[in-house]
Length: 179
Image (cartoon, rainbow, N blue to C red; front, side, top):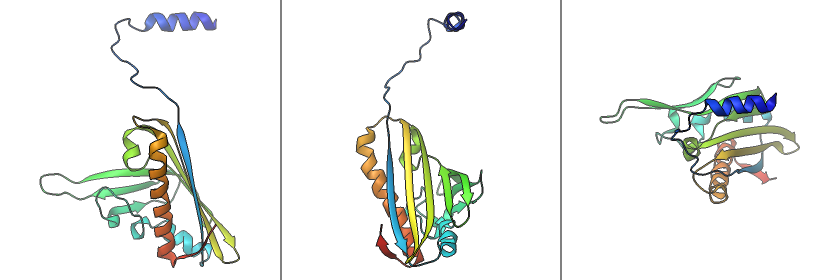
């Protein structure tokens, strides 16, 4: 039966199709950062869900254009104001897929220049109560197909992810220690 289905599907595909695979390789990478801040989880959570106060990379060069709807299905989005002859626009940085206030924020999306590729990204920010305050674990996983070497872009993405966490920690009052 399975062979029959495959044969039927193959017969339905036109022989003159012009599409081609220009590059095929598997790949991805994962980054991890962790810091401890001298603040309780409620304070960290409140700062986390307001990226307009600390996020460092935007399409509009103005973090005040960011918004985060911290609920499943919510958008981490950016409004891009009209400039000169160009009308206003917008960007979805990530889609919220899990919210456990005070504990976990998980979003799905390929950030920045990764967005134009066939990549999927998942950012999980986890908050843990520790003696000194709150440990923030920041994990970003990316996988899929890209027109560039994942090995070359991974360190750059890791640097940017570290920058995001450092900016969040600075907004809260600074890092007590790195984990």
